[in-house]
Amino acid sequence: MTSTSCGEQDGPDCTQVLAEVYRLLDRECPQEKEAELRRHLEECPPCLEQYGIGEQLKKLLARKCGGEHAPDGLAERLRETIRATVAERTGDDVLAPGADTEAREA
Image 1 (tube, helix red, strand yellow):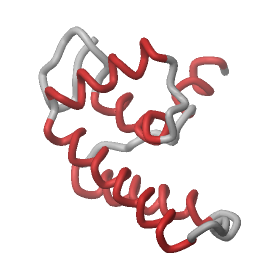
Image 2: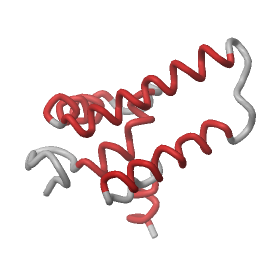
Image 3: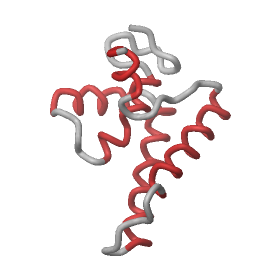
Image 4: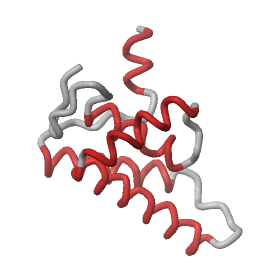
């Protein structure tokens, strides 16, 4: 498997990691997948930076929304804005979580 930025050959590529970063943040990854993603994050500064942005966003939403739920669609709009910004800065399209799975199943 080739990587888009870090050169790591044995794990997921950067696009795949960034597509799954919210699953990792939400602790929705199976243990084996989480370990694989965390190894990649340790070795790839660009992906680690994006993970950190997502982590800070999650904390900000939790702090600002308190015990309340964010308005419908807010989290998804924020994710889309982040994906667009990442794509603009890196030139890579970042898939929405699960999009690569859906594309393979089609």
